Length: 130
Length: 215
View 1 (spheres, rainbow over the protein chains, first blue to last red):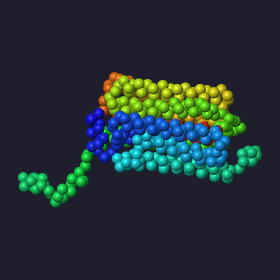
View 2: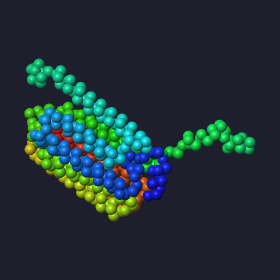
View 3: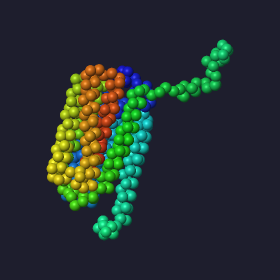
View 4: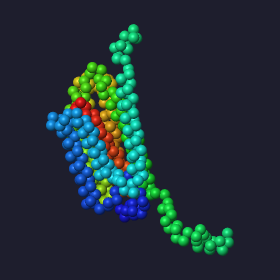
């Protein structure tokens, strides 16, 4: 334990997943808080998806926002990716990963939507092939 | 090299007058940080791969070929149970990390066993769901939508299966070898992997199941 403690505090970087906090109590509390927030956000998601109480067109937006919030909670409380100076490398890698994710998903949806718009309906296409 | 130059160099050869204190290097980062960082890069590339499956699912969402859509197929109660299993397993995995840092083998094995049971429960629920879909004629061959659905959710399920194999390996390694430095690095990577699976599941149940049944 002391060797690892030394390793963690002697240098300016922290491995992803490692915490600066080494006392058990606060670490335990961190996981409990993370679990509580995650349960709250999950329960809200499931409630919003099946309810008539909110304006219906807002439901998809609300679900996406809740999902992103919960992923943030997981990153901070479970993976210990923080904005601290010792975490810069980890955050930069995460940022690059997210850029690619958004390019892949956003780009695919954008292009395929345009293709669908511009494509002839399937039955006409079949007629032409006869 | 003469004694004179050595003496000079040892003094202050570049007239830094103490400035070198601020530019000294610590040398290479400790192995734990290098390993953890490398595994973090792998996880991010894994997430990029999942984003491709998500993209294909989103593109093929409407291509049901006259077959059933998500709203007719999904059972949200089962999904909620799966979510609870995976979320709790993430929590117990965190407890296992703490126990490993405390060098408490008993608590570590207990927490890992709980993680394993919750992961297996998740897989059982998902297997039941898949079997139900296939038996109702909504297998992966029914439509492009269902192909994309099974590819996406099945890929996550395979990751969970691999994670459980890894988990059992780690339990055995800690049992046989104790909390050695190299074992601790593997545990760090395993914890990262397991938590990342939970993050992907959050995207999955929100986008596939909840948006699918709301729409």
